[in-house]
Structure formats: C-alpha cells, structure tokens
Amino acid sequence: MQTIKVHIQKMAGNEDIPLPAYMTDQAAGMDIFAAVASDEMILPGERKKIPTGIAIALPEGYEAQIRPRSGLAIHQGITLLNSPGTIDADYRGEIALIVINHGQEPFAVQRGMRLAQMVIQAVCQAQWIESSALDHTERGPGGFGHT
Image (cartoon, rainbow, N blue to C red; front, side):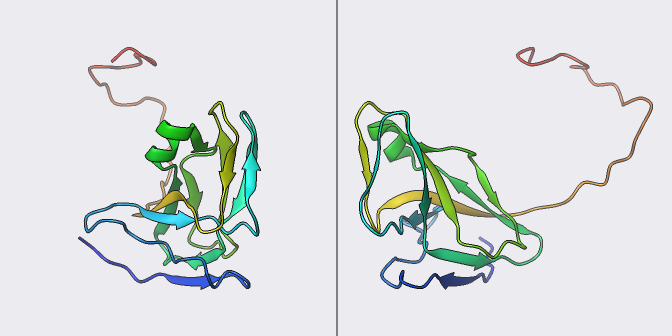
C-alpha cells in the first residue's frame, strides 16, 4: 500500500479534536471528527455545515474525498450532501461537512464524534480532444439503464 505525507493543521481551539485516523490496518478511509463548540442538533430533513477543526495541504496530484459513514447512515439516517465532497490540493481552508438528517429523530452532533471518512486519491486531469466522431463500441449510444 502506498503512503504519502500530508501536512495537517488543527484550527485554533481544536487541539482536543483527534487527527483523522484509520480504524483498521487496511481501511481506505480515515474517520474525521466533528469540531462543534457544543452539541449541534440536526432535525429530520435539516442540513447543517459542521466544522472538523482541521485544514490540510495535499501534494499536487492528489485529492481528499469526503464520504459518509455507513453506520450513521443505516442506524440514524445521517449522511453527507455533496458526497463525495472533493478537497483539492490547492485548498487550505478548514474542512467542513454538509450533514443531513434523513432519519425520523433529531440527531445530536457531539464534539469529537466520528462523523465522516476521508479517502486520499491520486488524480489526473483530462486534456480534451474535440472530434467529429467517436470510436464505435458494442454499447454505442445506449443510455442510462441500458446496460
């Protein structure tokens, strides 16, 4: 498994918030934690921006994907909008989560709660080559739901 070094900064006042952490040896995603000042209640159908208390400096050619945690989704109906969210290599601001409650009960986000996962991925950028025709495939122009 490849390892890269990523600089991380805890935002002022968040020294108690754990750094993102892999929970098992072969985990692809690191859990990231809520850095709310006090419990933040999210009502059913409501969404809120939740701080994580961290900023990162990814190396050029990488992104961080922010994804929901499956346990929160199945048990409480809590997930993330804009998922997966993308943190670009040139972004230096605090990472925040757009959390939505699809459950039927209010959900309390607590300080230090594992709220999402972050996956670091290598990226490439496309260079478009405009063409008058594309190569033929067996599927052809078969659309959504035709596979």
